[in-house]
Image 1 (spheres, rainbow, N blue to C red):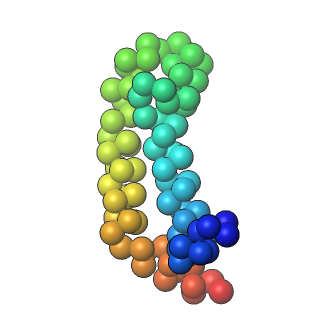
Image 2: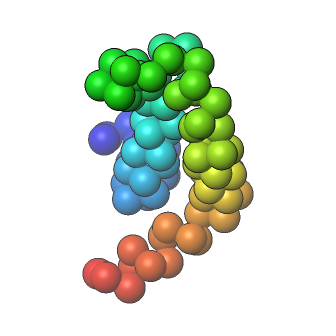
Length: 82
């Protein structure tokens, strides 16, 4: 956290980006932990699960891109709560 503050990054903004990145990482093939769990629990082949998550993965990447390009999306509502 001290490094984030020294770099001049808002801690709330960093937290939101961190969580979004972690969510994307959990469903990204080939190592996505959530993909393996869903495949095992649902007894569905991994390939079928991977084809089913593409629309959600694309949406998450687009949201992350918007958050990076327009940090006000996170920062302004967070300031309303303070």
